Image (cartoon, rainbow over all chains, first blue to last red; front, side, top):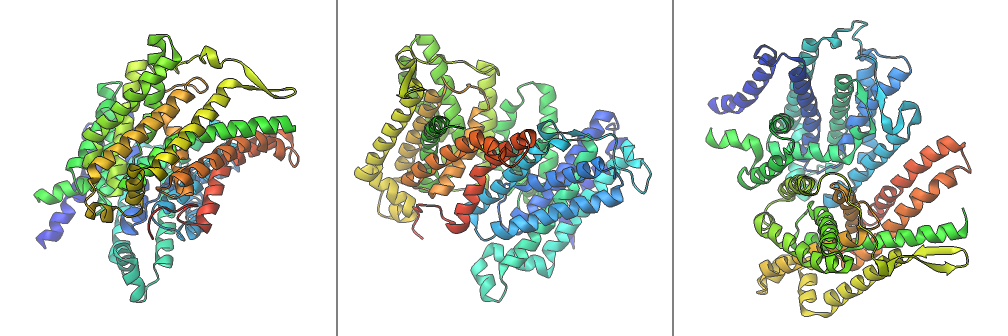
Length: 310
Length: 307
């Protein structure tokens, strides 16, 4: 019992802090924008965690799914549809479908080839987005206002948007935890530890991994929908491989052992970048070595930090 | 689109491929022999270009700059190996990826602090100014021919080193089965340093050679890095021969695709959408080729590791 409580203590603390943040002196515009961005990238990192930590497959193409979610907002906006109840399912569905189609091919390989094939599909999506002249091409597309919910414009409200992002982050986190604890997740973990043995006891990893990849794509699509609404601007850089890399770094820094690691990694990287950026223009001179030190001394990532002392 | 244009672009592609090979050779050996993913390899290329540029400016001679930049690049590579990388050899790939990314951030920023973020210009050395008439009406810059020649010569030298010397045999043995090599009593730590130093120097050499024709800026390593990874995966990780074939292939596909596809698309589409679609498709071509090759041969064209 105490063990379960201890395991839940850190997530409870962090989600509690995020919920209280607007009333702890972080209610200003720039702080809320920053926190929303951190939470949205947290959702995207969670989706990648499902693939890397859950299924044991390293992907360098997660930004494509994020970008497809964002471009779903753009395409529907250009067609005059701004209703979130329509846009959100389309964003999630489109990203999941892309993941399903590309995953079906990529899963035929493994290891480094999987990294490179997901990168290849990501790059194809990136160059496609930059050639879409009707949606701004390289220059991107400016949205005039956020999506409406059942006709109401409450996503425009800073506080409401904050709690929307927080709620969806919490929801995605619980979904990932539930998935991993289920029978489905057990097969996924078994295949991650030893694919041959999983096969020998009658579980072909392929369909399980593919479904996990598609679910991850859907979650990333949701993050894309939120990101487009948060910035009210979408550009091909949403799909760049550097962003896939950033998401991967968040997941690794946070730690692969638990989905909460992805949330922690995203928050840590976004907030640390911002804080160091305020200290000095050349914040990367500090941030880079910090990453190296984190790898050398924090085995198991940021989530391992609380666990060891706990 | 004439035959001459096609020839010029094919030569440009080969020359780009040769540069890619110089970067990819070190990457594939480090990955193949040490099982170490070094994202910071692109930074070695950038460092080479910056060192070459500033040493050439300081000494007033491109050749002296080149000569001094090589040991400097080697020293940088060895220093990085000693400071950071050697502590990562026994860690998993993801830890290596994150740590070497940290190194990239640091060095890109350090370069910005030292040399500024504006691109540096390096003049083409006097001896290699001008052009050669390849055929009537077709003049090709001498410097680009020199890059091609230098790259091919380095490739030949590397081939001799890897295929015909004792050190090369050890490197190949390491790429094929590393634990076995260590069990036979070979000091893999020293071998790693040798491979690492050579790789860093080759990437630095590519950077110096590329400096006069490309802009020397803080992000130049990142663009090359991703293509170098494409090259080593297509070629088969750990295989220098594979890297050579794949680098030329990627160089030609990338260059021809980007320059010719917009024209080809014009045969089917109106000019403006043709330019857009052609540019996108041309940039995608390398990745499409990689996906196709990996779908058929998941271990690359010339797999080096013992299955």
